[in-house]
Length: 297
Ligand code: HEC
Image (cartoon, rainbow, N blue to C red; front, side, top):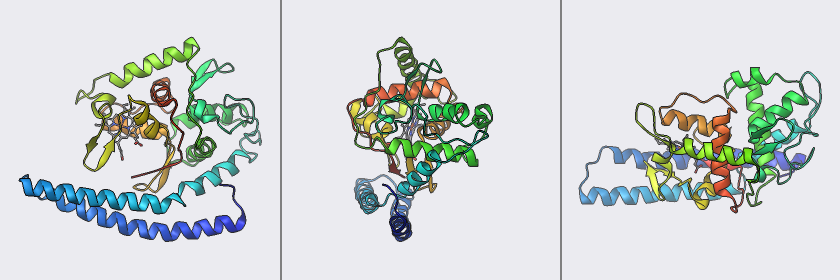
């Protein structure tokens, strides 16, 4: 993970080669899933749908494996680490003294114990809201301005890079999201309530799509986020590199897109509602190993 000059050149090259393979494989997978759309539902067709789906899955598993050695996210981790250590913002300071819950400057293993309650802000904070706080407190950035911006603006992209770096430093560490303080318990309760809240034009809740094991929409797995396995594998693998957008998405962005799928209004970045949902999913994941940065469709 730690860049040497030759290491990063090599991984850039590997990345380019893998991208080409990936585009080809995604093409094959798309052609296969595309050919399904015109078919009607006789037994034979179902069979061929199944086998096409299986081979698409195989292709996906294949490129996942190929990318395992060089997940494009690793390049973003390197960028994030360098941002973390750079003197930036109006105060020209680095984030090296940012307290992520395990003491100032401790990054290793910190994300596996987030979201958590922070004494200095008297709030339960998730990864992104804590980074945002440190950027304001230590570096002098205006957090209100940053919250109002879109995910794709330069400084908001920097938050995603910082998040992917911090999360990567917990890779393999079992989640241990704390739940001893009343503030943490309250946020869990709110998160759970939100998870099951049905509303909007389609009367959907998160649980409509995410509380059954083995459920899928088209070719996408829909993890059961109410179980340790489901939450561990899903929540625990974001921030992730998204192949379909060619960029790093954090959990905040994942949630924002699921609110859209749910036909709910767009949530405010780093708002208590989004943090509560992460407390719910993170606590459900406890005991599972953190695996971010993930690699997603
Ligand atoms: C209409 C169905 C739908 C609803 C409602 C929905 N989601 Fe999702 N969610 C999806 C789909 C589809 C994906 C996979 C997206 C992809 O692969 O592009 C997903 C992905 C996710 C993931 C990442 C899973 C993984 O394996 O990486 C998380 C976490 C998640 N959703 C949380 C939520 C939460 C929390 C809510 C409620 C605020 C919610 N979702 C509401 C459809 C939904």
